[in-house]
Image (cartoon, rainbow over all chains, first blue to last red; front, side):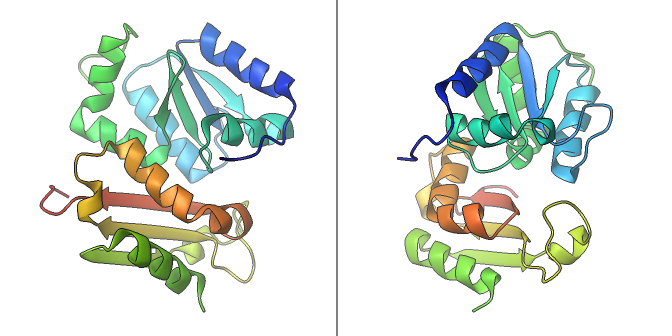
Length: 117
Length: 90
Protein backbone atom coordinates (compact mmCIF):
# COMPACT_ATOMS: atom_id res chain seq x y z
CA UNK A 1 0.00 0.00 0.00
CA UNK A 2 1.30 3.44 -0.86
CA UNK A 3 1.92 5.70 2.10
CA UNK A 4 0.06 8.99 2.00
CA UNK A 5 2.47 11.90 1.84
CA UNK A 6 0.07 14.74 1.03
CA UNK A 7 -2.27 16.52 3.48
CA UNK A 8 -5.85 15.29 3.84
CA UNK A 9 -7.08 18.65 2.55
CA UNK A 10 -5.68 17.71 -0.86
CA UNK A 11 -7.77 14.53 -0.98
CA UNK A 12 -10.80 16.59 0.12
CA UNK A 13 -10.25 19.00 -2.79
CA UNK A 14 -10.00 16.06 -5.20
CA UNK A 15 -13.18 14.49 -3.80
CA UNK A 16 -14.90 17.86 -4.19
CA UNK A 17 -13.81 18.29 -7.81
CA UNK A 18 -14.71 14.78 -8.95
CA UNK A 19 -17.97 14.94 -6.97
CA UNK A 20 -19.16 18.27 -8.35
CA UNK A 21 -18.20 17.73 -11.99
CA UNK A 22 -19.44 14.89 -14.20
CA UNK A 23 -16.17 14.63 -16.10
CA UNK A 24 -12.82 15.76 -14.74
CA UNK A 25 -9.45 15.50 -16.46
CA UNK A 26 -6.29 15.90 -14.40
CA UNK A 27 -3.75 16.93 -17.00
CA UNK A 28 -0.57 18.80 -17.79
CA UNK A 29 -1.58 22.14 -19.23
CA UNK A 30 -5.15 23.15 -20.04
CA UNK A 31 -7.79 21.88 -22.43
CA UNK A 32 -6.98 24.86 -24.67
CA UNK A 33 -3.23 24.47 -24.31
CA UNK A 34 -2.12 20.97 -23.29
CA UNK A 35 1.56 20.79 -22.37
CA UNK A 36 2.03 17.05 -22.80
CA UNK A 37 1.21 14.78 -25.71
CA UNK A 38 -0.55 12.22 -23.53
CA UNK A 39 -2.80 14.88 -21.98
CA UNK A 40 -3.46 16.32 -25.43
CA UNK A 41 -4.56 12.91 -26.69
CA UNK A 42 -7.22 12.60 -23.99
CA UNK A 43 -8.44 16.15 -24.63
CA UNK A 44 -8.76 15.21 -28.28
CA UNK A 45 -10.91 12.16 -27.51
CA UNK A 46 -13.21 14.14 -25.21
CA UNK A 47 -13.47 16.95 -27.77
CA UNK A 48 -14.34 14.54 -30.56
CA UNK A 49 -17.08 13.14 -28.34
CA UNK A 50 -18.27 16.66 -27.51
CA UNK A 51 -18.04 15.89 -23.79
CA UNK A 52 -17.95 18.87 -21.46
CA UNK A 53 -15.24 18.42 -18.85
CA UNK A 54 -13.39 20.26 -16.13
CA UNK A 55 -9.66 20.45 -16.79
CA UNK A 56 -7.33 20.60 -13.80
CA UNK A 57 -3.80 21.66 -14.62
CA UNK A 58 -1.47 19.76 -12.27
CA UNK A 59 1.49 21.85 -13.41
CA UNK A 60 -0.02 24.79 -11.57
CA UNK A 61 -0.53 22.92 -8.32
CA UNK A 62 2.16 20.64 -6.98
CA UNK A 63 -0.01 19.33 -4.13
CA UNK A 64 -2.66 18.17 -6.58
CA UNK A 65 0.01 16.81 -8.94
CA UNK A 66 1.32 14.52 -6.18
CA UNK A 67 -2.05 14.10 -4.47
CA UNK A 68 -3.96 12.77 -7.47
CA UNK A 69 -1.33 10.06 -8.00
CA UNK A 70 -1.78 8.90 -4.42
CA UNK A 71 -5.56 9.35 -4.43
CA UNK A 72 -5.97 7.12 -7.48
CA UNK A 73 -2.93 4.98 -6.73
CA UNK A 74 -1.91 5.57 -10.33
CA UNK A 75 1.58 6.82 -11.16
CA UNK A 76 0.99 8.99 -14.19
CA UNK A 77 -0.90 12.01 -15.54
CA UNK A 78 -3.37 12.39 -17.32
CA UNK A 79 -6.14 10.83 -15.25
CA UNK A 80 -9.78 10.85 -16.32
CA UNK A 81 -12.68 10.71 -13.86
CA UNK A 82 -16.32 10.23 -14.89
CA UNK A 83 -19.01 10.68 -12.22
CA UNK A 84 -16.44 10.31 -9.49
CA UNK A 85 -15.01 7.08 -10.88
CA UNK A 86 -11.47 6.70 -12.22
CA UNK A 87 -11.54 5.60 -15.85
CA UNK A 88 -7.85 5.52 -16.78
CA UNK A 89 -4.95 7.33 -18.37
CA UNK A 90 -4.15 8.04 -21.99
CA UNK A 91 -3.74 4.46 -23.23
CA UNK A 92 -6.95 3.25 -21.61
CA UNK A 93 -9.06 6.22 -22.71
CA UNK A 94 -7.87 5.90 -26.31
CA UNK A 95 -8.46 2.16 -26.37
CA UNK A 96 -11.93 2.50 -24.79
CA UNK A 97 -12.81 5.17 -27.34
CA UNK A 98 -11.68 2.95 -30.21
CA UNK A 99 -13.76 -0.01 -28.99
CA UNK A 100 -16.81 2.09 -28.09
CA UNK A 101 -16.50 1.20 -24.41
CA UNK A 102 -16.00 4.84 -23.45
CA UNK A 103 -19.18 5.87 -25.23
CA UNK A 104 -21.07 3.05 -23.45
CA UNK A 105 -19.69 4.22 -20.12
CA UNK A 106 -20.78 7.83 -20.75
CA UNK A 107 -24.22 6.66 -21.75
CA UNK A 108 -24.61 4.39 -18.71
CA UNK A 109 -23.55 7.24 -16.43
CA UNK A 110 -25.96 9.66 -18.08
CA UNK A 111 -23.27 12.02 -19.36
CA UNK A 112 -24.29 13.71 -22.61
CA UNK A 113 -22.01 13.42 -25.61
CA UNK A 114 -22.16 13.57 -29.39
CA UNK A 115 -23.57 10.15 -30.37
CA UNK A 116 -22.43 10.57 -33.97
CA UNK A 117 -18.76 10.75 -32.94
CA UNK B 1 21.76 -2.42 -17.48
CA UNK B 2 19.59 -0.18 -19.65
CA UNK B 3 16.24 0.89 -18.26
CA UNK B 4 14.47 -0.90 -21.13
CA UNK B 5 16.21 -4.16 -20.23
CA UNK B 6 15.41 -3.61 -16.56
CA UNK B 7 11.71 -3.18 -17.40
CA UNK B 8 11.86 -6.27 -19.59
CA UNK B 9 13.41 -8.37 -16.79
CA UNK B 10 10.90 -7.28 -14.15
CA UNK B 11 7.85 -7.88 -16.34
CA UNK B 12 9.15 -11.13 -17.81
CA UNK B 13 9.89 -12.50 -14.37
CA UNK B 14 6.49 -11.65 -12.91
CA UNK B 15 4.09 -11.99 -15.85
CA UNK B 16 5.68 -14.83 -17.84
CA UNK B 17 4.72 -13.20 -21.14
CA UNK B 18 4.53 -15.12 -24.40
CA UNK B 19 5.56 -11.87 -26.10
CA UNK B 20 7.13 -8.68 -24.79
CA UNK B 21 8.54 -5.59 -26.48
CA UNK B 22 10.03 -2.69 -24.57
CA UNK B 23 10.87 0.26 -26.79
CA UNK B 24 12.75 3.31 -25.59
CA UNK B 25 10.93 6.25 -27.20
CA UNK B 26 12.79 8.95 -25.29
CA UNK B 27 14.20 10.46 -28.47
CA UNK B 28 10.63 11.34 -29.53
CA UNK B 29 10.28 13.49 -26.43
CA UNK B 30 13.65 15.23 -26.35
CA UNK B 31 13.36 18.71 -24.88
CA UNK B 32 9.85 17.99 -23.55
CA UNK B 33 9.13 18.39 -19.82
CA UNK B 34 10.24 15.26 -18.00
CA UNK B 35 12.76 14.29 -20.64
CA UNK B 36 16.34 14.07 -19.39
CA UNK B 37 19.35 14.88 -21.54
CA UNK B 38 20.66 11.36 -21.00
CA UNK B 39 17.36 9.87 -22.23
CA UNK B 40 15.71 6.66 -20.97
CA UNK B 41 12.58 8.44 -19.76
CA UNK B 42 9.81 7.41 -22.19
CA UNK B 43 8.97 3.79 -22.96
CA UNK B 44 6.40 1.79 -24.84
CA UNK B 45 5.63 -1.70 -23.62
CA UNK B 46 3.68 -4.28 -25.58
CA UNK B 47 3.12 -7.40 -23.54
CA UNK B 48 1.07 -10.56 -24.07
CA UNK B 49 0.48 -12.72 -21.02
CA UNK B 50 -2.12 -15.28 -20.03
CA UNK B 51 -2.22 -13.57 -16.63
CA UNK B 52 -4.19 -10.74 -18.27
CA UNK B 53 -7.04 -13.03 -19.33
CA UNK B 54 -10.35 -11.95 -17.79
CA UNK B 55 -8.84 -8.73 -16.41
CA UNK B 56 -10.04 -5.21 -17.23
CA UNK B 57 -7.74 -2.65 -18.82
CA UNK B 58 -7.32 -0.86 -15.50
CA UNK B 59 -6.46 -4.10 -13.70
CA UNK B 60 -3.84 -4.90 -16.35
CA UNK B 61 -2.29 -1.45 -16.09
CA UNK B 62 -2.28 -1.65 -12.31
CA UNK B 63 -0.48 -5.01 -12.42
CA UNK B 64 2.27 -3.48 -14.56
CA UNK B 65 2.35 -0.18 -12.62
CA UNK B 66 2.76 -2.03 -9.33
CA UNK B 67 5.65 -4.09 -10.69
CA UNK B 68 7.38 -0.99 -12.04
CA UNK B 69 6.51 1.21 -9.04
CA UNK B 70 10.10 2.17 -8.13
CA UNK B 71 11.10 2.84 -11.73
CA UNK B 72 8.01 4.95 -12.41
CA UNK B 73 8.61 6.99 -9.28
CA UNK B 74 12.33 7.56 -9.71
CA UNK B 75 13.38 7.06 -13.27
CA UNK B 76 10.71 6.66 -15.91
CA UNK B 77 8.63 9.68 -16.87
CA UNK B 78 6.11 8.01 -19.15
CA UNK B 79 5.08 4.49 -19.98
CA UNK B 80 2.72 3.65 -22.80
CA UNK B 81 1.27 0.19 -22.30
CA UNK B 82 -0.52 -2.27 -24.49
CA UNK B 83 -1.39 -5.39 -22.51
CA UNK B 84 -3.12 -8.33 -24.12
CA UNK B 85 -4.06 -11.87 -23.22
CA UNK B 86 -3.02 -14.44 -25.86
CA UNK B 87 -5.42 -14.46 -28.79
CA UNK B 88 -6.95 -11.06 -28.14
CA UNK B 89 -7.25 -8.70 -31.12
CA UNK B 90 -4.54 -6.05 -31.36
